[in-house]
Image (cartoon, rainbow, N blue to C red; front, side, top):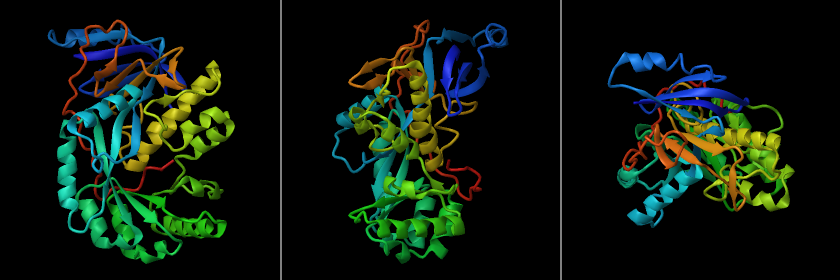
Length: 374
């Protein structure tokens, strides 16, 4: 059975437009701007098959956002029981998150075992997930990257403890493998003294490596302000958050400590005005959905509201309901099924049983470098 959502305010990074969404087979099959589909568009689906129908739902009073992504979680390394693990996922879903990235620590010869155990733990997951591998600079060797590629790891987290750590890596051997497997490289500055000379040396090395080897780098906040000139291979996914943080009031700065909110909900805008609210939605769509999806290599399957992407949607009423300075989504849809909340005129849509429906999204080998990280 198909579902036609009419008149919703679809939020993209370019703007907010009235549009109709047709959802079938867990995907967005068609998107028509300015809500001109009904009823001429729906009638062919009623006539195609007698046992197939399209249910119409008016969402003209709702904003529609792409499902947010938990960019870096440590569920595999946590000590959650099965019940606590499922409750945590449900809490994220109620907050508007539909995908998460789990981090695995590199252990010599034990990566196969960790991947199997992490996959087994996520077997009853409600959400789709990806894997990220955390390694230190002295451990990043060609055989490590080759193992990551064979296991379709989406991203490598490289821990930097000094400015000399980047020189320990054999980039002439490692970089082609990272590029061929379409993996992003995220830097984590650990126990590093925040001196200007140290950060400047690291940033110069990153700039050279990104330009020479064409690797997608994701750099920490402390290096964002050094990226003065445009470099398409250095992902400034959190620069918009930092800019918004500087302009926001002090009591709201705690929500923007990283690219995802410090809480399990979508943060509310500091000023309650319609124009500021729509700008806030566009900022969230970029920093919590689109850019994380591009960094993880799962765009456009995730992180956008477009044709052929997964029907992971977040519905927020206009005006939104705010609790503890967080926006509470009225409904969350995962793969075309209602995971939390309800929509008006859609009472016949049962809440989907999403247990075990979460799937691992893997990278594709020998992927052409055509996606701009921005």
